[in-house]
Length: 193
Image 1 (cartoon, rainbow, N blue to C red):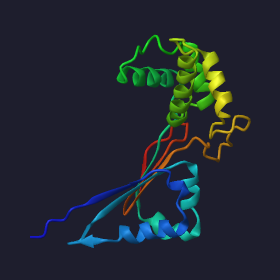
Image 2: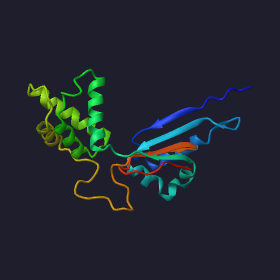
Image 3: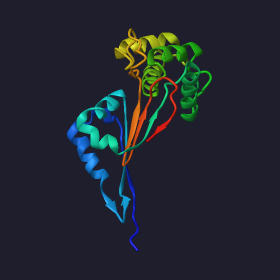
Image 4: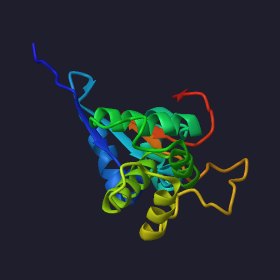
């Protein structure tokens, strides 16, 4: 008996992969032993991944997608809970380090996208610490946004049309055993194919 080991390949920021590389991943997804796929590929990315995969050159890869998932952006309450949880896990004062107003300001700027929440919270925390202050305020968040020249992946002035995916989407694709996930900022049911 030959024991078959299935490996996973996780690729983040997959929207940045060139089409030839996506084709190479498709070829890798064809590897089999004893009728079992040897490699499960998981692609994670922003909305550009869905756009990338919709082009005709990706037809063969798209046909191998076993599951798709779109992850919604965090609500204002979830953003505050997320920030407080991360502070707690880091050993800090989860209730006193960030004011409620600071958490709200971070949510307004980052639109509940965890990667952007982390960036804004971290920069605002550094500003507060540099100023010798023990609490992060909405003013620190505003200062952090200016220092970073921050602009969310969600266009502030442009709301997405109903037929479009918002720019906050995070997509994950699984080929053959390739997954696709998307963070759309709206509630959508899990779609498996």
